[in-house]
Length: 200
Image (cartoon, rainbow, N blue to C red; front, side, top):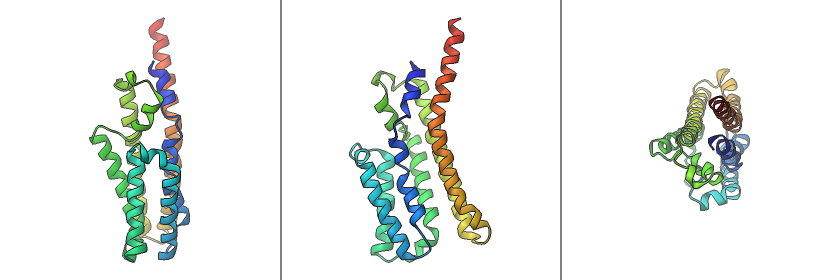
């Protein structure tokens, strides 16, 4: 039943822990190269620890995060490319947006890799299941684009627009997490309502 698997599909915490490296980086990063290196290193460690299972299963989000933070760590910490520091936020969100929309175009929206573990294989081709995952993945793509714009504003207008835009990126991420938790339950209730009306 769609109303059953849609509720269960996104209850897996894995998709939410996939965003922890980004949050860790944002909290620890500063304006200096040393703080950026520490933040990138911490994000890498969190990616490996919390996403080890996801990496082993070849999940798109986990590997994209590992490659992204790994590349930036090498660029700043090893190759001493301090010039990327002012645009680090833009690089991160541009890369994540590209991967997210790319997964939709490739017909493997990254959320479906988590959702499939929660449902019977027979339901994987269900149109409702597919639409929900495309929508949730698309929302995350939009979130990354919004944060890309906010990161640009932080870079281009440090005072006072940047002071407002920078913390807004966290609020946008929190809104995305809330939506990811809420939306499947909303669809479940909607499906149950339709089923109830058709049964009368």
